[in-house]
Length: 199
Image (cartoon, rainbow, N blue to C red; front, side, top):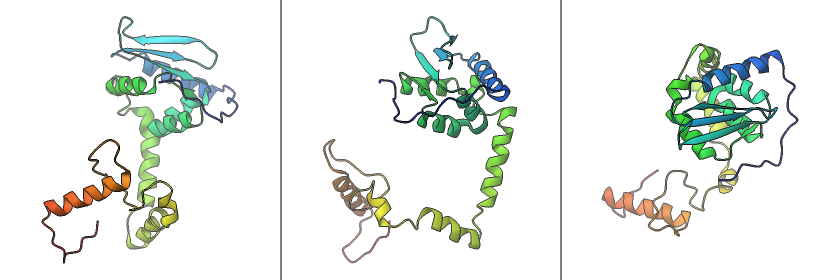
């Protein structure tokens, strides 16, 4: 897989005490890499390698903006994803990086740790603010489902089905695969022509 290129990459943020601290925390986490080999290329071009030096499993992350490490630190997976989308970091082989990061999850402390406390508090507060009370459920529905069919037509087929399809062959269209799923479900449920089903 070739390195991701983005049409937009903002100017790198200046290095501050906060971003330098986030970089140090990220490198300390990388030092706990146990499975495979990880190379971290920093914004200044310096590179450090962690893990098993002789491993045939390797991955590389290129940090283009030191603010990326801060986003990863503060917002975890979401921050990493957003920083990737805006071009703050990249990888020549993203699937390999994600696979090895997953294998090293416990060693890296991605499952938790004291630094995740602010993120956990923020998520808890946000979740409680969206509790599904009768009043709040109206807002939740409006925010997620009252988007109109024009929105869904942008990425769904003409059946407007957003659950998984069942493909009979690799070249089958999404619409035909959705109809195939409906047919299989009707057969398994022994539905008759006079019955009606709401997905």
